[in-house]
Length: 60
Image (tube, rainbow, N blue to C red):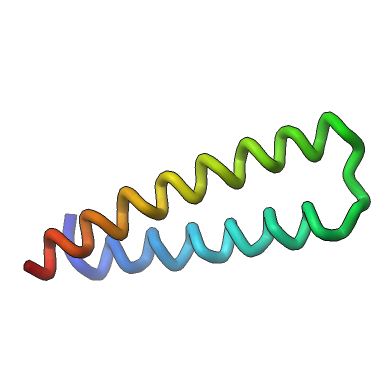
């Protein structure tokens, strides 16, 4: 995967993470939705870490 592709994916994940965090802070979610969004947030953060690691390796 190329540097620009990795950066694009990271940017998309950052936007998604921000969306999830905003949703969780709003307090408008029921318990089930809050659980789903929390799980999705955790997965997006894991993926972001993976792609950040790939970017570091691609730079080196």
